[in-house]
Length: 549
Image 1 (cartoon, rainbow, N blue to C red):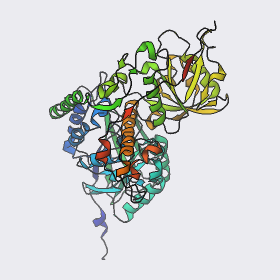
Image 2 (image 1 turned 90 degrees about the vertical axis):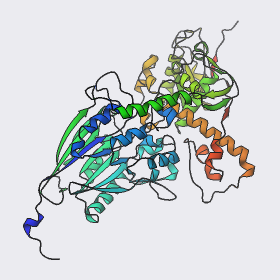
Image 3 (image 1 turned 180 degrees about the vertical axis):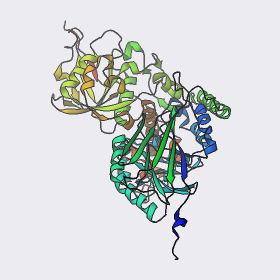
Image 4 (image 1 turned 90 degrees about the horizontal axis):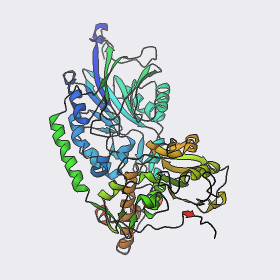
C-alpha cells in the first residue's frame, strides 16, 4: 500500500440528519397540544423528507392500547410503513402477544429490527429474530447501529426468563461497537436503547466506543450529555420526535475521545394541529376502527356460571367476577403474594350470563387500559389498607376490594378503621405478620393514594407499571393460556410427549403455563382452536361478621 498524501485524507464537512422517536401506543390524537396522532405524525415527518433523513425508532409500538386489545397491534403496520423507518429496536411491549407473534409481525415490516443482547437460550437466536447489528451509509458516512435493552424488563415479558440468554448491555455494547469500528470500518456507532435513563447513563459512562444513544422506555422528552455523548429520548405517543443533525467535520472517523464530542444539533418537533392529517393513513386506520366492532363479538372464553358485576354486589361483597380478575392480576405478576383490586375498576354493572364470554364483555368490564404494579407492603400496612377498603360499607364505594391470595373478615357494626380483626387476615393461608414485607399486586390508581388508600403512598414499588401487563392484556393472555392447557389435556392421549427438540412459545408467565407447549408436538393452530372454559366461584375471601343475637 502506497503512502497517502495528506490532502487525500481531507473531505468536505459531512452531515447526518436523523429523525428519532420512541414509545408510541395510541394512533388517535388527544385534545390538548401537542395533539399528536399517527396521521399528523407522518405529515410532520414528511416535512423533512428533503433532507433524506435516517428515521430511527427505539421501541414500543405494538401495545398497549384499547385498539391493540383487538388488533394485536396490526393498526401500526401502515403507520410504520408511512414513517419510512430505516431501523428500529424491539421494546418490551413488542412481546405482549408472544414471541411467535412478534416474529411474524416484524417480518411484515420493511425495515430491520435490532436485538443485540437478548437471545433464545437454546438457539442463541436474538429475540424476535432481530439483527444484532445493522450498517447503513448516509452521505458518505458509514454508520453502525446496535440495539440494547436492560435486563429488568425481561421479567415482565410473556416469555419465561429462564429461556432467555441475556448479556449485559455494557459488555455487549462495548464488544459490538468496537467490532463495528475495527472490523467493519464504520465511522460512528449509534445505540438504539430501550431502558431507563439511569442505565443509558451507565452505557454512556462505560462504553466510549458508542457515539450517540437514542433511547426509549421512558416517556418524557429528555436530552442530556454524559461522558461527551448525547442521550436523547424523544417523548411518547406520536406527540414529539427529534430532528438531529450530526456534523462530522472533515475527518474520516469520529473521535470517541470525550474531549472531542460529536457536533450535535437537536430540534424538538411537537406534533401540533398545524400539521394536517395524512389522508392515506386516516383511511387505512378507519379500517381498523371498523374491525373493532366485528371483533367485539369474538368469543374469548366460555363461562360455566353467571358472572356478577353489579355494583350492588361487587362494591359490597366478594363476587366471582372480582375473584376471577384478581386471580388473573396475581397470576400475571409472577411473584406477587396477593392482589387487591378496588372494585370501582370493574365497570359493567350487570350480570354476565353463563355461556360465551365475548370481547365486548371484557371491554364492558375493563373499558380502560388499566395499569397494574407490585408494591412492597408490611403486614401492618396491609391491615390499614383493608380497613380503608371496608371503611365506607354499606355505601357502594369503589374502594371496596376484590382480592386474591388473601382473605379477611370485617364487622360493619364497628367504627371505620376498627372493622377488620387482625387475626382474621390470612395471606396464602398463613397468619399476617405485622413486620413482614409482602408483595401486593394492585392498580396504579390506588397506589397513588386514591380511593382513600393513603397508606399505599408509603409503599416502595417493587415492579412498575412498565414491568407489568395492562389488565385487559393479562385477561386475554390468561384465557388463551387456559385454553391451551385444556386443549393439551384433551389431546394428551393423542400426542407424543417429549422434552427433546422442543420450543418455547409461552403465552403467560406462570411456569406451569409457559412449559405447556414444550411437552407437545401438537400444532399451535390445533391448540389455540379450543376456547377456555372457566367456572369462577366464591370461596370465602371476604367474610361479613354478623352481629350476635
